[in-house]
Image 1 (cartoon, one colour):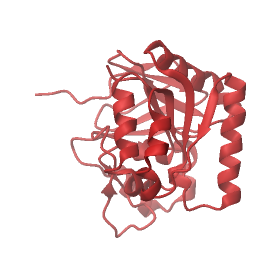
Image 2 (image 1 turned 45 degrees about the horizontal axis):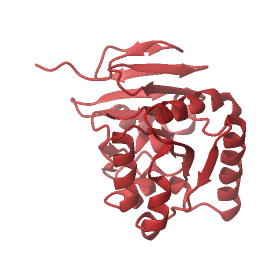
Image 3 (image 1 turned 30 degrees about the vertical axis):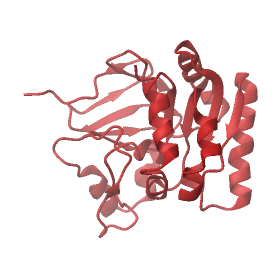
Image 4 (image 1 turned 90 degrees about the horizontal axis):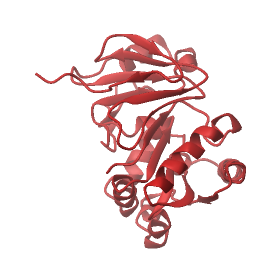
Length: 243
């Protein structure tokens, strides 16, 4: 029984997303998990100590607002990601949250590690897993190199091999050149490309076959399925028809 799975455009730990994040914790608790909110800041692992403290404190405030224990795990490199003490803290937690930063660094750090193994095992036994921005991008099979256009995509964590996510979609193309935008929109024929606006998420709840949009903006289906925009509460099957 897989737990709930959320792809978030932006807004981790912010008050506007508190009700949504609490719902993910509630999903995990219903499946027998402990009411713990695990912050996994690996994508920001090369940022400053000050910036990492900012994320830690923001997550603690969110945990206090929701009324659950928040645990900031200092998983900043592959050595950390194979630390049994850190792995143990993830076991049986209701929500594991991969927050934003560098998706390539996040994937390179977690692939083939004890931490990634326990995340997958905990999710497969009913815990909720959320990825915001880089944390959403990394769950695909590959991550485009939009900052280094001549570089090939790098391997993702491959939990959702067919789905590719462009986070911050309502602002993303203001930040990058047109050439990078074209690269992002070019995906293999067997892939589904979605854009998730800021302060917005799309979630597949435990036991459901469809995904549901949550938030104040939109989810955009760009490739692999009919083009469409989805609003809060609307549902979609993010899978390609089989011959």
